[in-house]
Length: 450
Image (tube, rainbow, N blue to C red; front, side, top):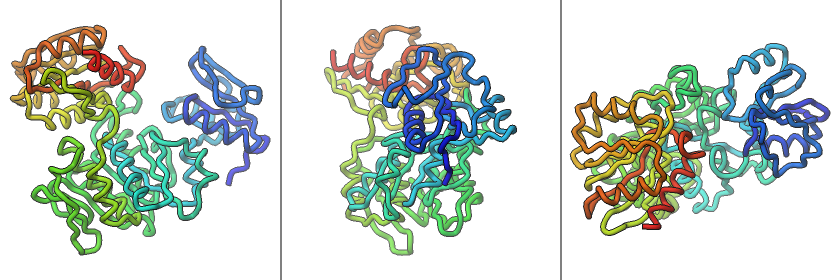
């Protein structure tokens, strides 16, 4: 265990992780300095009198004077200033790395390009219904260091883990869950190789006492089986595997040669076949962590999903509005599109993350039920050109950067009774909204006003 008493420690990047790190470090008598680019940063939830603050454009100056630097997930791991400080002997770490070293119980880590939140929450809910001492953290749930006083050897901690967190992890979870890996965050990572490599640490440090739960449906995730020394299990929405799978519309669990029928996919409240992957992943992981079939069935058939993930907002004059604002890349938008057969008006666009939209353009062009495409935000022309390249003949409307009220009103005008309006932007939100949550909340607010 690291001894932080009297050590000079920088907390690089403020937010939930920064608060978590600062509280822990202050309680262990460290000399804490918070570094953040935002000159107007508001510091709350900590004893400000005991912390130094360096804010603004020069926040990365003088990093070599610290013993430790705690990097927030959003801060790129290989900034030149960070690399330079590390070469001089400064230890660059994170809240997650420290938690993995200190956690007395078992960690179930979940990563993938999309589906992490749904899968992590499902695993947590199944284990909670089983009566386990279980906690949900990482990108969602509680700050991890804040959990430490509550944990014992019997505790289970489910962590939703992004590439930002995994990029320098040196200790893999006891159970590592690998969902589908496509490309995302190309505005943060130095290319696709780095992005995928960051994800690999979910299993690459595992040993024979650990378990890996891998999506068997894609080569991008299946290759992770070669990276781990753990015992391997799988999940699939269309093939029989050792783990959990869907076969002819029925979900099964088979981790030890004894096939157990869980139930029908048609009875799930979660919409879309892509969620079959999340459900089977959660079933397999939760079962390996000690959940029985009864708790599994009770949970998956009552689970309605997470906010901003294909969330049914309301039926207005026979038109259903769905909030899928969490969809910030083309692959998740494709999954959303494939979840519907009704006449659809699709809202796309936002800020550019450096992703490629040609495949999505082809899917939209060939999907017969899509009638209207509403393009918004900075990336309008990029998506528009992808649609033209696919010879898309749908009704395409460029709206620029209007108020959400105008977008929702236009969709109601265009969409026939019995149809759906789907906000599934395929992009980040930062050109028009602070984050995807605010984008989704504004959409819901305006729909509920109709």
